[in-house]
Length: 583
Ligand SMILES: *[C@@H]1O[C@H](CO)[C@@H](O)[C@H](O)[C@H]1NC(C)=O
Ligand SMILES: *[C@@H]1O[C@H](CO)[C@@H](O)[C@H](O)[C@H]1NC(C)=O
Ligand SMILES: *[C@@H]1O[C@H](CO)[C@@H](O)[C@H](O)[C@H]1NC(C)=O
Image 1: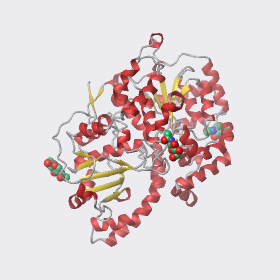
Image 2: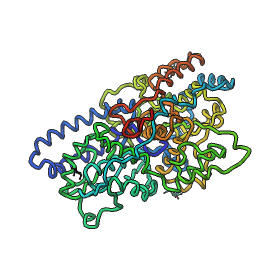
Image 3: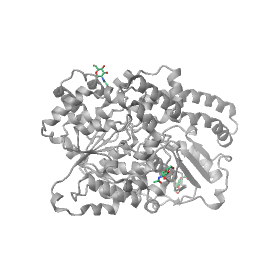
C-alpha cells in the first residue's frame, strides 16, 4: 500500500521459506501435542503437504493476483517515506530510471491523453457517483450485539501478526473472533517486526488500545499481557506455538475447536505466529461474522497523533474548504472538527479529490513476474530483487515453467503501471483540474514517473507534497504509520481508484467506503484483464475508441453487489451480518 502493509499477493510464495524451515519444528510440535501416536502418518502427510505447498505457491500466485482479497502475509512496505525509501530502495530505483521512462510508458497514448485533456470536456455525470439507490439501501449495523459478554475462561490467545498494517488489521479482527469462539481471553496482539520494512510499531503505536479494549468488552475479555504465571512458560516447548504451516489458510471454526481448543485447555495459552488469513469467511456463525465487522469498522481507531496528521492531510487535500467528508469522523475522530476552520474565500469551492492507490512498488513489481517495458536491465534488476526478498519464487522461476510475462499480462495478472493508471483516469473523463491524491508514492522506476503523471494532472499530490518534512518526520521511520496516513487519505476521498485488486490497502479502503459511505463513496476497480487487451492496441488505437472501451470495462465493475460467498467481509461488507438493508 501505500502502506506498508500489504504484500498483497505476494504472500504465499514469499512465505514459503519460513514455512519450509519451520515445518520441522511444527512436526515435532504437532506430534507431541496433537497426534501423539501417529508419527508415520504425520510424516507422510507432511511430505504431501510440502509438495502441495509448492503447487499451491504457483497456483496461488495466479489466483491471488486475480483475486480480491489476497491475504498476503508478507509485509509489504508500501508506504515508506521518501527518506526511508531512499535508503531502502535507492539502489534499486536508480539504474533503471532512464530506460524505463522512455520505454514502458506509452508515449503515444500519453500524448493523446494530453490532447484530450486540453479540450477540457465535461466530466461524465456519474464519474463521482455510485449507483445511489441500491448502494444507499445498506446501512452499517455491525455494532448491534445479540449475545452476552464472554468471560474468556478458556485460557489465553496470543497473536503475533505478520505483514503490513493492513494485513495486521485483518489478523487482529480474526483473532478477536477466534477468542470468542473458544471462550478465551485475548492478549493485545503483537505486530511482527519485518527486516524489510523495519517498522517496530506495535498495536498501541497505531491504534487506541483503550478504545479497542473497552469497545469489545461486551464481546470478549482482552488483557494487555499474559498473567505472570504464564509468562515464563516456554510456549514452543509445550507445543503452544501455532504457525501458518500448522494451519491451512482460511481454516474453519471447526478446525479451531478440534485442534486449537485442546492446546488451550491443556496449556492455558496458545500463540499464533503469522496468522495471515487463517480464519475462513464462510461458513461462520452469524454473530461471529458480525463481530468481525464490528472489530474492523468500530473497534480500531488510529491514535491521536495519526488522526491529527491525517486531519491535516485531509484539510490540505480539500484546500481548506471547511468541508468534513462523510467518513472523516470515523477516520480522524475529534480532529475532524479542526477542518471546519473558516476561510470565507474558499468556503464555497467544494474541493473534491480523487485518491489513486498506485500499488507499484518494487516488491509488487518483482513479485508479479511481469515485464514492464524496461528490457534487459529491468529483468536483471527484478531478478536480483527476487533473489533477495522472494527466494522461493526465484527458485520456482528457475525450476518450473511458469506462465510468460505476456501470458500473465493478458490474464490481467500484472499490476497497472503508473502510466496505465493515469491513462485509465483520463479515459474515464477526469478533467485536467482534478485533484489527485496518490498513495503509495514509492514508485518503481523512481520519482520521474510521477512527473509524467503530473504533466497530465498538475494537481496531483502525495503526502510528501502535502505535509512538510517536519510534519512527516515523526512517522518517517514507521512504514505502518505512514500507511495509516495513506489509508486516511484514500478512505476519505470523493472517489477512489485502485490499481491492483490484490492489494490489502485497496481492499480495506473500499470496504470502509462501502460501510460508512452511504452510497456516496464510489470506488473504481479496473478489470485488468480487459484493460490489458485494450492496452495491447496502444500503438494504433484512437483516443475515442480507447475512451469508450475503458469506460465500458470500468462501468461493469461498478454495480452494487452483496458479498459473494467466501469473500472477505472487510472488503465486501454488504451482507446481512455487517450491514442492514433499509428497503
Ligand atoms: C463457550 O461458552 C458458551 C456459553 O457458556 C458455551 O455454550 C460454549 O460451548 C463454550 N465453548 C467452548 C469452546 O468452550
Ligand atoms: C530513522 O532511522 C535512522 C536509521 O536508523 C536514524 O538515523 C534516523 O535518525 C531516524 N529518524 C527518525 C526521525 O527517527
Ligand atoms: C503496446 O503496443 C505494442 C504494439 O502493438 C505491443 O507490442 C505492446 O505489447 C503494447 N504494450 C503493452 C504494455 O500492452
